[in-house]
Image 1 (cartoon, rainbow, N blue to C red):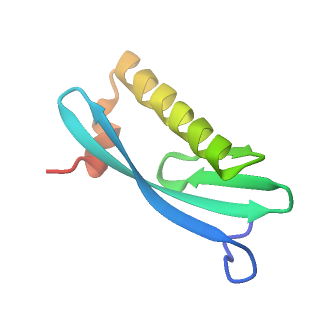
Image 2 (tube, rainbow, N blue to C red):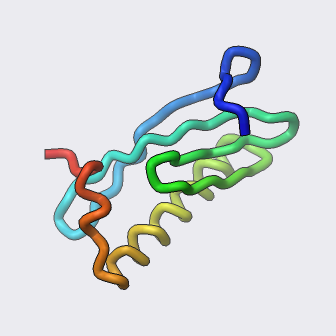
Length: 86
């Protein structure tokens, strides 16, 4: 996937999660490619796609929730430190 957003529609946002008493802010980039919206969380190597922006936002949120739960299960929550909002 090209990182060039000049010729295609790109949007950016920080998803906010509340987890284990912490508030996390995770940056996401959305890019329109043909009939698909692609959501990419580069910091965690998570990518998903959907037919609409709404669907894609739901899918990336679900993927990140699963990622956070997996980190909890394997004792690796320290990987989320850089996303904590003080």
